[in-house]
Length: 497
Image (tube, rainbow, N blue to C red; front, side, top):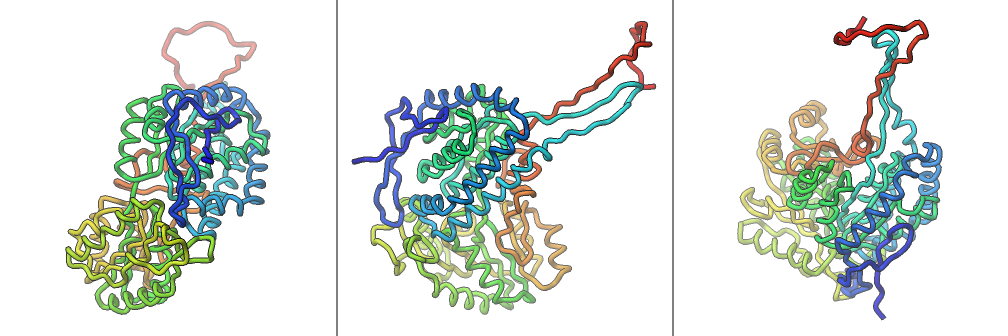
């Protein structure tokens, strides 16, 4: 009997009007676990209507009430995070420990959102003119839309909706149809925490649902994480429809290793950042820029560590799980043919891995390519899989130039024991998030996440101070309470005295 995943609208599960569905796979088994309903324009309209109806009451709820609900949600999520991790592993394929790490980083943002009363404080200037005060307040936008990707089905939504809700907005979330169950689980948990019906809604779907959100006149903002072409489309379409937009795109993250670096630390970091979550993350290190004098030794140490990695079902204590779909697995594998044709060396080939899992799973093992030409699509494309490309450089200057010439600017890292080189790098590199001897420099929740260049479209990064700014609008009030002795009229232009 087929299991269907419904939408969550107005505090309850609903089938919606659309009859279209899409299969949800267990990628470690290669089998369909359920069908997710693909929402229509009418289904999006229903979710937006529920959010709009819930907005006035939630906007007017006291900060103490909102904070209490967010904190209760935080406690429930922390207590039941292992349950959510199992959902993530069953639909995405990442190993349980990686799923737990994803939830932990999402919980950081919930912690941050629980402090929203402090973050919503405005400013006050007394007596800017005689008897006149000016002050500002931060108010919610209204109904906000969130469109999240398949690679982090819990963490990325958690980057956005806790802050949006704590600020007084109501939400319509459209998760990836590839692994949609986490979104429903989070929405139902928030309802259990006391969130009023309609404040948090989930509509499943594909491009039809996305476009309906982008074009809906009641939706005030769109938050998105995904590939660069889609991020650009989201930004242009939503902005054309008068919405505030934060659209985080793709990446090709470089890690520059200088000759004075600790090569064991660098090799460990390259393996961890290149193959964690099967490389399906926008902060993965996919290009290793190795200075010639240490390149051979570094490649050797990385290959040695890769030989110890165990690929298989994430529920079986493996190091790396499968890719999300067969189509994506085959696309990633095709880049190895390109690499060989372009003259690169396949040091470790992941096309036929020895796995601890069902043979029908969407398997692709950790892969290491050396001497990759900058002209190859293996270098230029965001492969989004466990493929680490080594590009050899003669110096710091050449490595920096390569990074700065990339059309992406999401994350980067430098490995060195030279403080001067590290300081120069952090100033000169044209990338939004920089790691110094840290391979995946994802900022903590009270800073903000986002890249430069074609890795981000819009003016506000995710979570942190910029996230609060994105989900609020400032109102400035100029106030004068008249003294009883005041009198007379003056038609002249107001002057400060």
